Length: 447
Image (cartoon, rainbow, N blue to C red; front, side, top):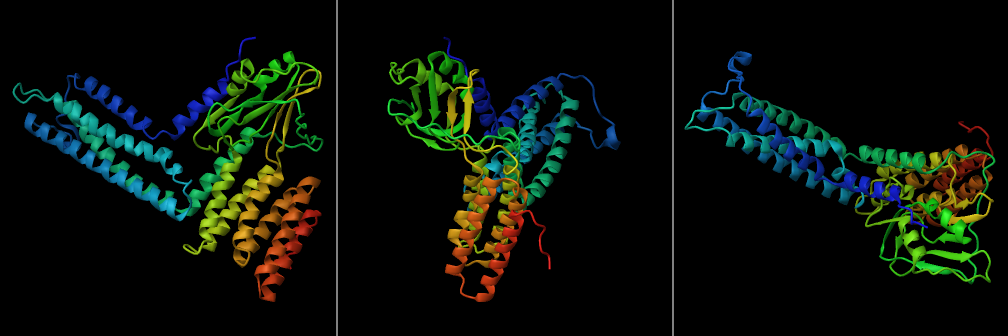
């Protein structure tokens, strides 16, 4: 049987490389500038009287000086813009989270502005070579375009300063992480229905054999359906070991495989089976929020934890981060989470994929903050408000209600241990009671 090609992994890897590559837009600008200059320099018409003489190019010396100034200025502005970007990266990493700066590298506006500067610089250099003082030849239209591109670069630089100032604001950072994470939920999870089953991973029997990882890396994508036909043909059950976003370690089990009949000969984990398992996975060097919802929540929690640290002490930012996490959790409560079982046409489980449950995602947000700052009233009250809103969204799902009830009980215990003032404790208890009211589906008590 021919080993199927994991096209989704190939396309996913290509999309991730294009998405995180900063050099693509500048490289396209370089080649585009050379092609544009080479083409325009051959055009034989002038703009001598355009706009009252503003676009006149003059003789060869004047044209050369103009293009040289445009080229020099463009290169200087590129250097300034790049320096501003580096400063923004340092501020974001120090103030928010070391995982946030990737947003600035992947920011399309920043890449576009850099491309405009580089295009103008390379275009001017190329046009400069076509000006011949001895022959008196001046590609007037090309020189006029260099002037116009210089004006466009000035506009782009003003826009860049405006954009970078807004991009480093915490509200913008949180909004981007929140939007990308919510989009990842819709792309990777199906909407939840009332009659959805709650699958559990099958127990791995003693005769199961491991398929070992060929290298270390982060699990970026899993495409288990590539193994379905093979597992059905060989009467196998295949269970993946790692979750999305986990760090796979070389020579540890990627999957466990066994035959449904324990008396049959077990499959060879080093041959064709291993190739198929490896092709069903996408290993990389960094996590991506496009397929890994947990990574988006991790970024939001990192920002909140950094904000409540003694070095920064910014509870307002922590509360804003919790609000963004709340938006993500409300959307998660509406989707089918938990382990995934893939069955063949006969209803036999062939592939088992472990996935995070709603409780896992909830714990990912609440536990670090509850343990880090149990005495911070602003953060603890915001956690209670988050649990109330998420509880109201998940009130008709028993499993999610239980998870939220368990978390609010832990929040109360943490506050009892850390908060000394009874008045503050009373606020926590009232907020916890509001969560309990939300979980039973009753309207909030606003008085």
